[in-house]
Image (tube, rainbow, N blue to C red):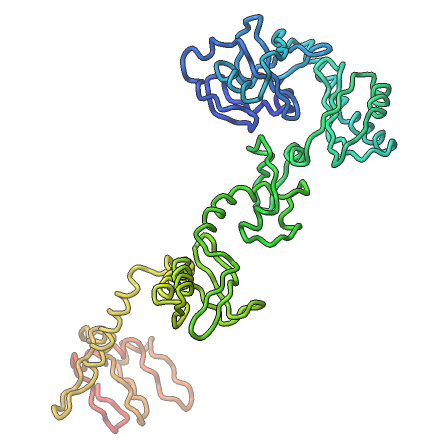
Length: 464
């Protein structure tokens, strides 16, 4: 039973107490939550394969809900379908479907049994092979038609052949051959190219699923005038859909374009100024602006003005007056004001850090302070202040080390006591002066004063 729902598209049906529409063929039940709606089940809507629906009478008083699989009356035998709508909305849908009052209304037999499902599955398993063989038979008879699908009745006594044809087809001989080949009752049903595309499905050039396969239930004819009203180039490769017909979406916005075009002057009207004559070149219908050119064949000295300004110049020409120039200050302001959003805002505006400006100001202030403190005052003879990070930290500080005088050899290490530094003194190589060890350096720093640099001596020996 679950396989039946998936094959017939009824697996997407919602629960019986919900009015949500999960299938494009289902009617939105806005009375689903109202008490007493489920009790009035005299008429029931039943859906079959390939968008086929029927309305049946619940003469046995069965308690039916959405998604129930039932066996209904057919000629001959019985058929199996899915309940899609119950309650007080069914008569409204029957009136919408233009069913005549004197039309014969068949009845619902029962809910399906396992025996009914076995016959149904056996009949459905023959549909694909029947479609392939029927296509070959139609081709052998030379008929200009395409058989798109085959639907067997629930008991397997009848088969419906769905076909597409551009012209009228005489398929009387085809019905005889098909009845002798498959031993069933034959019914031929013609469908349009848009219905065929909706049955197959696919992805449109917009990147979304086809409208005819998702939500469209009725198809309105589309003409090339819809493309002309919207100033779309009449390119058949771009205007045609997957069904080789004009796209249904051309009708979506054509009413808005027709309404906006009424506010624009005619294309045949020319505007005159003191220096030249301007001809219509193009228009932005939704924006309400018109571009004029001084030449009919190509764009030259283009001027874009609003529809209000075009009517003003037109009225002036009717009175025999000619303006100095076609555009005015207001139209120039409008053209500057209306820009693309991507030109107004930077795409990387969110990548900048919040404190970027404050950091730059702080860095400039610190640099100016350092330059001012480093420059000595003229005539005072004062030495510049030492920066904080270079201040001496005491006798043991890093900056208290004596600097090697320029142009003089390195100072010799102080002589340490023999007993104390006998084992730690490094051995000097030939031709080099002995390098002071660790204890000798420490004693040398202790003998110097805290913050004063040692005086430069021309002697190579330093007194310890």
